[in-house]
Image (tube, rainbow, N blue to C red; front, side):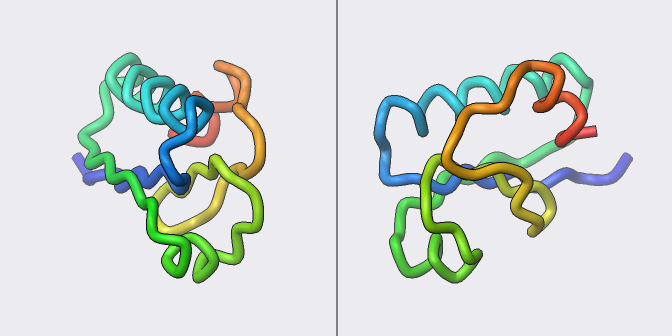
Length: 79
């Protein structure tokens, strides 16, 4: 099995925390082998080209930013 790298970009706002919890829960539900890293440094966040948080990055690719994805969207992004 390959390791999936999940990153949550955000400065720790409640929405960022919710996305972190959602991503971890969905990754477990999907049976993924994963790492989850929270990125709060503004320079690192902008290096991804993200202007609004929270953002979800999967294996180095920004999947969504500025909003929470639906459960179905999140499953598709992590699969």
